[in-house]
Image (tube, rainbow, N blue to C red):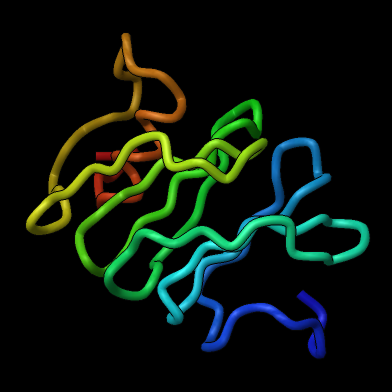
Length: 123
């Protein structure tokens, strides 16, 4: 985000454009995820649900869902069109040593979620 635009109340940790380039997702130390219009930089949604700062954000392949991972051990999947929370996954600690490269039968969003939880896609 260009400086001077109102939004997060603490440092931004992660920023990512949607696959079609029309939206931006950001995650912050203020424990929120924000969805922005990529042209006007207007905040469309502020998403609340994490109990600690947001480590990273990721759009799924079609840009309809954003997954956010937090230091609190949760990954939350959000519907981009409404800002609605779809599901929350909680883990006591990040996954380690999980091989997901070339795995069959998982959706791109599930793969993104596993990566956000710490799985190594090249293990």
